[in-house]
Length: 57
Image 1 (cartoon, rainbow, N blue to C red):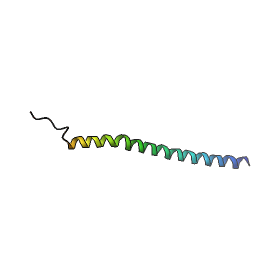
Image 2 (tube, rainbow, N blue to C red):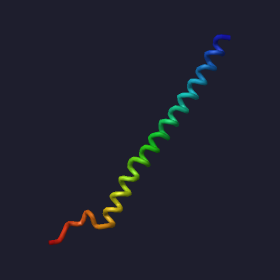
Image 3 (spheres, rainbow, N blue to C red):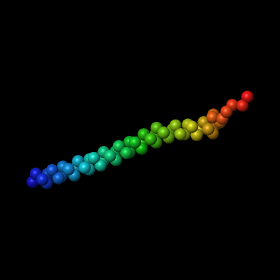
């Protein structure tokens, strides 16, 4: 009976670890999109407005 209980606990812990891994991956994806996305958007906007062009005197 103890063996069945420990096996059941292992299955639950494996499921929790898998769920935690998915949560970590989702968090990384959200941080990447909302962290890097606006920076890339700002750079594209500035390029379109000619911000990085060398000034002509």
